[in-house]
Amino acid sequence: MSGPTAAPQVHPSAVVGAGVELGAGVEVGPFCLLDGRIRIGARTRLIGHVTVLGDTEMGEDNVLHPNAVVGGEPQELAYTGGVRYVRIGDRNTFREGVTIHRGSEHGATTVIGDDNFFMQNAHAAHDCRVGNAAIIAGGALLAGWVEVGDRVLVSGNCVVHQFVRIGRLALMRGLSRTSRDVPPFCVMDLTHTLRGVNVIGLRRAGVDAKTIRALRDAFGVVFGARRNLKNALAQLESAGVVVPEVAEMIAFIRASRRGVAFGPRAAGSDVVDE
Image 1 (cartoon, rainbow, N blue to C red):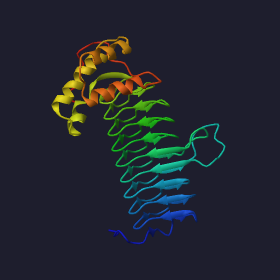
Image 2 (cartoon, one colour; image 1 turned 180 degrees about the horizontal axis):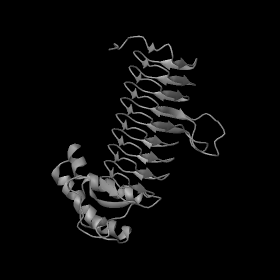
Image 3 (cartoon, rainbow, N blue to C red; image 1 turned 180 degrees about the vertical axis):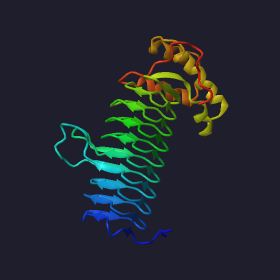
Image 4 (cartoon, one colour; image 1 turned 120 degrees about the vertical axis):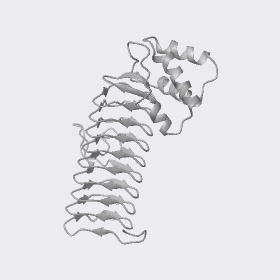
């Protein structure tokens, strides 16, 4: 295993451009291509057949599996080749076939935080913002300008429309799709339909039972029946002091420009075992 001050290891079959900076202990495996203004932090591993294009900066202890492509041009017809960026933090994993595109003609930077796990064939398009410790499962597709909060789980083969926000500790069930914002702490399936509170995810994150109960009660008020959201939020706030997580949910909903996912048609479908 490479030590913290070890020189980078580059396989003879890899192609590394003149503008590439490799940190201590970086491993560049067979048939990798690194071309452009690229900076890769210490101990990051490119296992093999990985493509990184500039302008890309990547932190420490990341792992990129075969056929991952980071920093490719945005899939935008208006793009004319200007300098755009990808910025990636530390300890991320990008499995086979993952694609992360750089910013678009009308944007600047695609940002991936720390400790994220992108499973096989997942995609983050231009100008996305992914927080920390999120899981983007196999085949999931994030369109341009999507924002993903910390510890979000986007399950397999989900699709997220451009400009959508997904709040902290939210969960999208497999094969679901959304063109509306997904509030924090909620479970969503089908087409932007909220099913309840992400109880198991909250417990795993160390959230106490009192806060989870408050979130479930708040979910019932806001999404338990189809109603005017402004009135529902006013009712929730008029009930008295709310915990910070409920306040976070309220602020997220109020900040939405696309509108938020709506609740189930039938009441009583709160999620307790996801």
